[in-house]
Length: 151
Image (cartoon, rainbow, N blue to C red; front, side, top):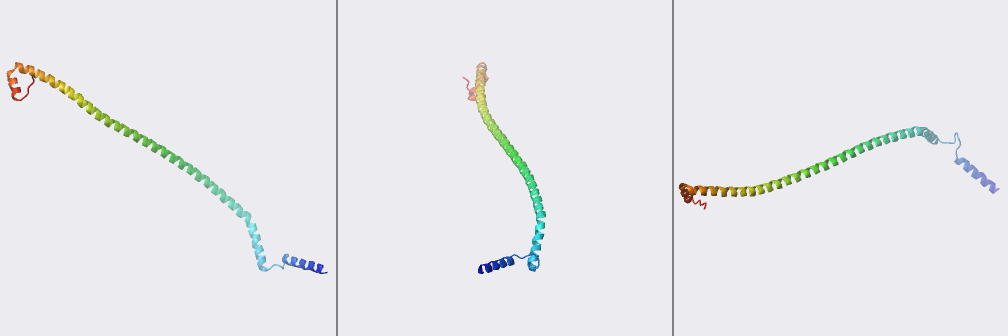
């Protein structure tokens, strides 16, 4: 009998813990149940809105990716332009340095060459004046007075 009584008590406890439909729920519990049902009805609309927002974000992401690719291409173009400009500047500097050394070398060579020509011309003029001074006594006196001696 104790066994039967224990089973009946357990059954009654079990039944009282799970309220049945109707008046056994309190007003607060009924309010919570209504809110849960309303929320469950709103879940599909919320999911659809979330999916739409994610789709828009993905679209924006693709647009941003395209813009970043364009920016990367522009940066690459700027790098190549900068490299070309630095190469051109280097070439111009080499040309200027070469021109300066060439001009200095030409001036030195031209001066040596000009000195050789002047020395040759001076020798010819001295020999001509020497010959002319032998024939003309006045010139011989002038050259002796001015310390110009050709012979």
